[in-house]
Structures are given as C-alpha cells and as structure tokens.
Length: 469
Image 1 (cartoon, rainbow, N blue to C red):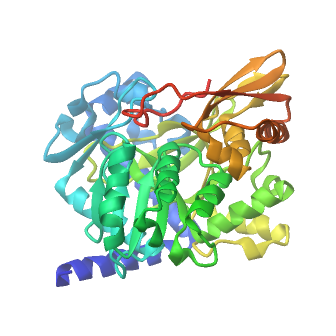
Image 2 (cartoon, helix red, strand yellow):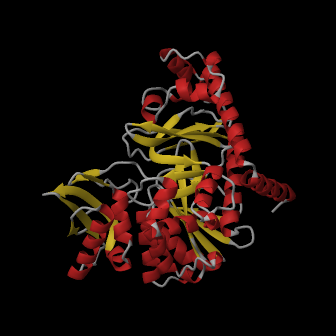
Image 3 (cartoon, rainbow, N blue to C red):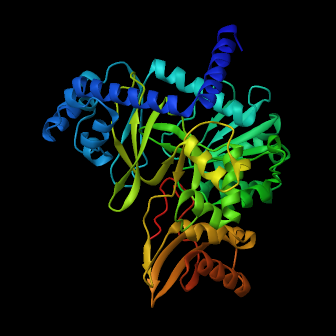
C-alpha cells in the first residue's frame, strides 16, 4: 500500500469513528440541513425535478425548514423518475457530465432504475467500502478473497482485497473457491440468500479446501431471517464469540442509491437475537411485529432517511446528501416497509425496560427493515413471506432439504406453501410436519406444505428475485 493509500485509509477510518460517536441530535440536525441544501440545488439545476415542483405548485423559496420539507415536498419514485424521463433530464444541469460508470437495478418491479458515478465518487466509494470491510472483517491485516455473486451489474469496488466478480452463477463461484480459496487467509462472499445458501452447501458437501479458511458472508437483496444466519453459521462452523473465524452480516442496499445504505454490526445482531428470543421485548421496543425485522445502522451524514405512511404502512423515503451525485434523489420512495429509530430514542426505550445492556455502542440511527410489505390474506390474517422464511430456517434439516424458494397461496382457509426441493433431496413426513407446525406458529393460521421438484434450469436461476405469490 502506498503512502497516499495509507493516508486515505487512515482518514476514512477516522471519519467512520467520528460519525459513529457523534452526538445523535447534532448528526440529525446536520442531516436535515443537508437534505434542504440538496433539495434547493435539485430544484434549481435538475430539469425533471424543477418541472415536478411546478406541477405540484411547490415554491422552493418557501421551503425553509425541515418541517416545510416533509409537509410540502412531493415524494418521488422509480416509476415517476426513471420510467418517465430520459436520464440526462434527471441529472444536474440536464447533462450526464463526466460519468464513468452506469449500472441498473435488477428490474424486478418491471422498471429499471439507474445509478451513475463520476470518477471522484468511485474513489470515495472504494475507500468507504474498504473501511467497512476492514471494520467488519479486518481485510487490511489478512489477505482476503472477496467473492461477489450479486446479480446484474452490481460491483463491489475494493483496493484492499482480491476481488472475483462472477455474477449470480453457482458453478463459477465454486470454481473460484476451488482454485483461489486456499491461497488467501480468509474469504468474504457477498450475495443474495438463495444463491449464497447453495454455494456454501456445495462447498461444504464437496469438502473444498477453501472451507478451512474463515468464510464471512455479506447477505442482502431481500429480507434475511435470523434463522438463515444460524443455518449458514452451522455449515461454516461460525462462533459468535469468535467473529474473526467467520460471521454473517446483513447489508441493505438500493441500486440507484447506494450499495450499502445500511448494515448490521455485532451489537445489532445481539439485539436482534434478543428480540427473536423475547417477542414481548421486541414489541415493547419496536411496536407490533408479525416477525422480527432486520436492524441496521445508517450514516445520517450520507443519507437522510424518513419513514412515511403510505397506504397504511410506514415506507422508507430517502434523500441523497452527496452534492456531487449526477442524479440527486429527493424524498425517494424505495418501496420498502421500514421504520427509522434514532439512537437516543432506542436508548430511552431500552432503559425504560431495564435492558440498557443491549444498547449498541455506535451512536447511529437504526433502519428497522421489515421487507416489502406484501402479504397473503388467510383466515382474516395477513401472512408474509418473511414469516415463511422464519419457519423454513427454524429447522436446519428442513432448510437443507429446501432451496429457500417457495410460493404461497390460500386454499380452503389454510396457508398452502409450495416449497421447492433441492435436487436429489426428498422430504420425510416428519420433516413436513415440523415445517407445517413452524408455519402455523409464526403465522397464526393453519398451514400445509406441498413439496415440489425444481424445474428451473441452473443457468440464470439466481438473476431474478423470487416471486412468492
């Protein structure tokens, strides 16, 4: 590492230490100030946004406070912006400018959104991700293979690791582990749950020498049940008391906003496990919960997050705060069912319950992510895919038999789950009974499981997210 790289790494680490220890109220006020600044800049310089404000009869000069911002500034969305307008008109000054990288979302919703980066932003993102990787996995001290199996064009830039980006493909990922895994000191695999599950199962089944190294997992792309962490950790021999020997970190990203908008820490994993073990504690802190949501820290200096009621649910709304972004996004709805919980408010709630021992050390706000909010009505109750995932990973034998892909329907007042079998696997009747009981326990409705053979070919299988209904 050169002297300039060492200095950049040092400064990035110091910046992270600063934001994680900063007074939460001061950070919140700064985030609000920056959100107003980005709004005014977009109103002046982004053609589409200027037209949108005129359409809603919003005079930017009258938006003076954060209360004005939340009261009168319209929400935006992928459909409103990317589906309806040419990219340059979404950019500052109506021009792409010196963009060096363009990438898209997965297109699951039927609409593609775009992220654009300039050269300076790419350098910042690399340093920032290197810092996060070092905080979580110590990549500067140990030679690390970073295996990226995220779908599409999602890149994970790093200057401190050996990167292999194979896309959402099983066999190439296994080939990388076979040929490179034993030649590094540790491995970090980044991807979405269904593919990560299969890669790690195959690696263990084939007794790859890579499995002798610590294997860390960064998982995102969809809701991750706590049981997924336990299942993967069981495969890889993880010990929560020895995270340097491997652990699972959940990350929350939105393609057009940030690769890692929010992410877990060891303290948040501990808090979530406490909620999993004590649902009364979970509801006392977070309110009514049909399942235990993901808990992730975010940096308020980078993104201003709101939780806005939309169609009866709190939805995540993001304003990007980097003034250099080619496409500024103001009050952008991601479609996620989520709450925002401040560090001080979490401290008050835990202290009131006599559980200050669970308070995270980082003084950062928390994104309480509950999934997409789509449910199936069964016997007068809404049942969510997230609950099915909880039940599936509650039993390691069931999890090993299933692919983690399933479909839900209501039949004669029962929840019917069509669960996909791993190739060559079959489900015994006692396993089916255990799965059905777990489904009934987490959903509160009668449940039945129908096992199905896998029909989808391996190639291209993991590029698109599963459809559960």
